[in-house]
Length: 431
Image 1 (cartoon, one colour):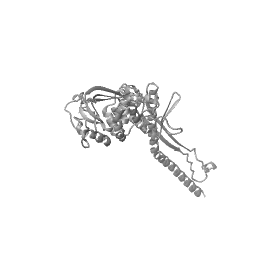
Image 2 (cartoon, rainbow, N blue to C red; image 1 turned 45 degrees about the vertical axis):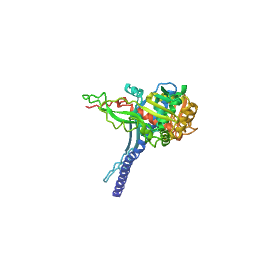
Image 3 (tube, helix red, strand yellow; image 1 turned 90 degrees about the horizontal axis):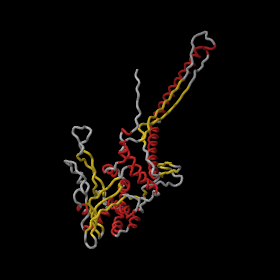
Image 4 (cartoon, helix red, strand yellow; image 1 turned 45 degrees about the horizontal axis):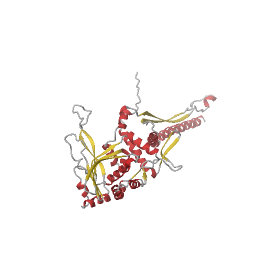
């Protein structure tokens, strides 16, 4: 009889040990199984925080408030499972007391805890402030173009103004030269903004782009290991692969030659590919540019074309002014749309019909900045300031706005160094 009770107790103890083992193993499996989900959640949370921060700074810029940038330098996530069990005491042998015959479990407990923390700090170093205040370089703009972002969107966003010398052959056959200043600003005084939009759209249709190459670094010092011998520089040029066939046909008809005659007529390094294939023996300044843009029956020549770029602060200021005016006043074209409006733009420029030019570029479907979601629609990014809520809709109507956010996120990442990120000191205590 005693032997039977002992067997029952042993079987019960073994079963309990099995339960404990399964609980421990299940706890480990639970931690491993949720790792992917937790990483995805952290990724999505960081993405949302970045987008909301960009929108908040645009809102601040619209109210002439200082911009604030913050960065998350480290994210830690931990999870632990613990189980404790009080096994009963087993007594063997004859003559046991009543208390010794009792089979009583001790205290049992199981716990599962998860926690996360991150290091967050303002980007307020001298180096970061200098970075976001420096004009966007042609190399950085080239990187964005190669990502497939429409050039008209990029020109609207990062180009502050276009300046060039223009020669016009009038009806009397006399050439006259003058400097043209076209400002990318919503203020339409002297048709400056309309002229900027028309020029940017024409250049887009003609395949205006950027190529890069490695030039000798003028600051290179062979005795200083911290300086590089070469540095990447950019050059504005016409890329035949990006040119719209309809636009090229118009220009070739003006020249009275076969397809591609326009590019063959350009001198020097104005066609992409020539300049980048030259390895300089010394540092070169950007070459003078001379661009011939024949208008139907009214040829125009341009030279010394200069794109003046904005800084990141300048981009936020531009978007803030755009938000203040309602957001939908600037619309941009996809690359393939430029050729379809080429003839209309040429004719409008020839006749100085600025209202027609405004109608052409304001008739595109995609807004540069869209913060007007339909009621109840989900938000791609949201921000609240001064009791007012702003939301970028999470649908196709905000496709360009999402591209703008992507551009700003990349540019800010390029301007952020490891020294700008918050550092958490580690203290190690040894006996």
